[in-house]
Length: 141
Image (tube, rainbow, N blue to C red):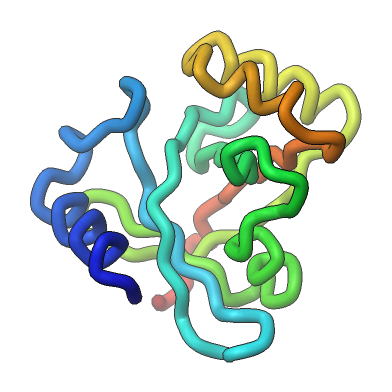
């Protein structure tokens, strides 16, 4: 893990829900590298999932770049090895990329909550994925 990323993860672990970017709470996502097989961590803005009482939505914006972020590729290749950490608790989650109208509605809610996400849509030709992360009850991390 790079120095800056490690510093941010440390801050997140100390501050928890108090740490926000653009007003949005964060989630620490851990995936397993598609090629390396190593655990990789990234902090992402998290959004409430209007369709589920537990779980969160995250977006694979990559700042509007042409390529999907590495964590999204890792998740697609190893969907059974995805964890989130919130309030010092790590839990296994089931990732689901939203599609069609469900994805579009979720994207609209995300942009309402975080208007800074809106311009990402015009910076890239790819459709920005919206991923539902649902806790797997009874799973050990």
